[in-house]
Image 1 (cartoon, rainbow, N blue to C red):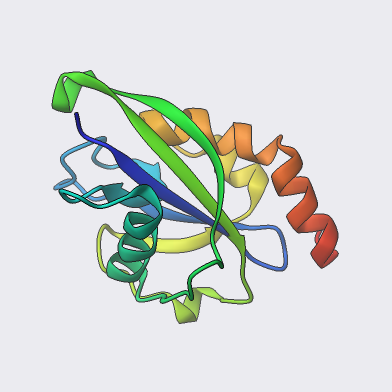
Image 2 (image 1 turned 30 degrees about the vertical axis):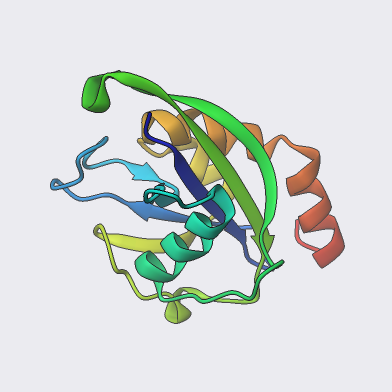
Length: 148
């Protein structure tokens, strides 16, 4: 069974790092989603999260900087014929769009929460983004940083 790790970084303004997928994406092309991807053989979720973040954005974080927020069952029936586990890791960051290298997709940028809710999101992000924005985890990150 495929397994996936995803990452949400939150900047000081409370914006979320999201990826605009291109037409070549095997899952949900031309939609906005989370940075992340499938686990390699023998890889655990946390290691995959750090690897995927580095591969897709050029951002290398130290062990312990990402926190497991939640696991979702994501519907990949159309592309993989399965419903797969996806663990979502989160972290506050001081990074800006200029610190991000787009290693996959059209762009990877920080998006205002109200805009993120209205974007054409991937099937997974459609469940995860609103749940995260409504979560205690997001409220804690933004309150600790003084974001609105």
